[in-house]
Length: 136
Image (cartoon, rainbow, N blue to C red):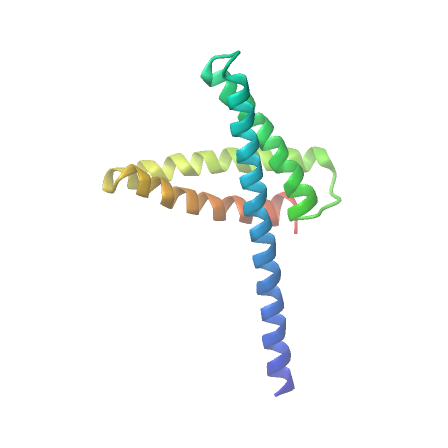
């Protein structure tokens, strides 16, 4: 009986830890997105929309990397390889978003298709960053 309790306790602890990391990942994404929009809106008065959004996206991505490294996955791995991997995961997620929208977009409304794509990309990005980028 104690083995069963120990096993259940261990699984609960692992699930709780995963949920904590996933919640932090979501918060980091929210902060990165907020930075993207803030920089974009600030630059819109001086630059064309695509330029403003691009600079906003770069700032948001760098902030997201910083939070992922220090707050979400808490790693001491070298910056250069993790930044390259983090950027690669970002490109993979952009491609996955496009593929999902291409496959399911014609079958439903765009908002619903994008919601599904966002969920898939969120899980994909989290998994790749957790197990490949930061080895958490």
